Length: 251
Image (cartoon, rainbow, N blue to C red):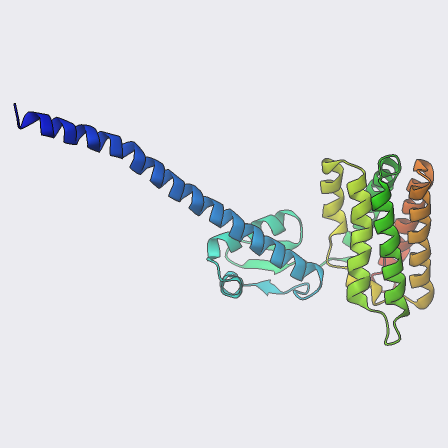
């Protein structure tokens, strides 16, 4: 009897430790999964930005092992990031070949602008009644920043111009307060074209684009939905003819 009790106590203690060990294991697994998600998000954001700003040009083959080494992560989160970019149309992922930065044909670019010409004016129309004074102020600052980039003595600062342009459109889209609409527009707007497009503008075309931005801002400042939609539509449609003419892509 004196020997049974200790064994029972030991068994009870072991039984108490088992759930604790399972909890620790579950915590470790959860932490590992979270770490993979974080690494995948970091890989996605890094690759996406490099595609959009032209550091990863159209037609370039992406090698998982090189990206993983550059970011200091395993290949699994890189693979997840490539899958997301493939679903967004920025990469072409094929079995037994790998991922390649998408090459946009002139017809595809024209379709993209037509999609934008339908969705972005609607976003501007909705935003006109929901946009805040702070967002209006940010748009005004972005207009100033773009115009300053155009006036640079050493030539246009394309990096600043394209970044500010993208932010200008995003502020308006976000002001529509519709996540679903924002996701739809993002697939059409975030193509790796803007910086290259601005580099092909004539002086007259770049000034026209700046005037369009100011008119869109004025319409939103007056909370005029119809005017905002019309101004945005004019801004987008003015690019379509150029998108398929003479082998050039312009916005």
